[in-house]
Length: 296
Image 1: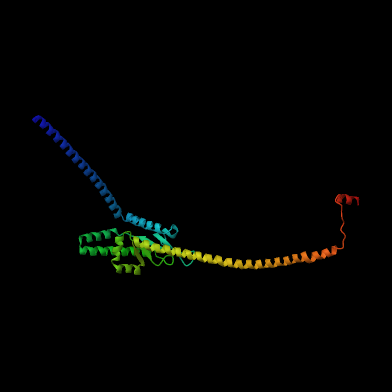
Image 2 (image 1 turned 135 degrees about the horizontal axis):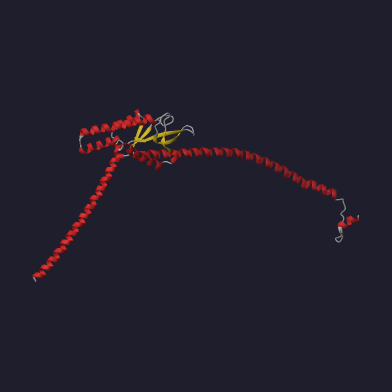
């Protein structure tokens, strides 16, 4: 009995230990897999950090987002890419919207350039997380200074009336960054007054482009309306000429009808009277008129 009990206990213990080891092994495998995914994610975050830390690459990301918004709202004929808006300048703005000028052949450009002052914005976010009042003020000044520097650069390179509008648009690709600039209305007004730069975020730019798109459609309708009016004026002139010609033809037809009526009545009656005294030659039906003529 003791031997049987020992065997049963040993068998149960081995079974339980095996199940426990298997469960621990599965959990360790899942942890290892999770660590691998976290390592991959860390590498991706590191790569993203490297991308965002590169000024040129960061500018390309902002430019791509700006181009995507323009592509979704406007047609390709309504804006240009890498446009030299200022005569005599080698600088090309990333995007520019085509606006109709005073004449149909003249095109006025609305320059739009994307900027992304990430370093200053990250310093501000860190200061806000910590709650350091002194560093928050310093970071805000650095961010606003960078924004003003961008505005000055855009104004000097791309604004050139009458080839362009008397203002340009600075596109900030992050809504929170745009909201941070809006928290300082004096800076916003200074950029418009001094550098003639209007700052927009993704949502604001979309609303602005939608307004321009509606304006383009209204202008197209007006142009089509003027074309239709010109066509109707030409049709009116041609219809007047057509009525005059139709009246002449009607008079000529009336004259011809009178002549035919006179010919049918007066002249026919006259001929009948003249021929009434002429005897009618009766020809028998079995006589051949041709033979008769030949015999004569």
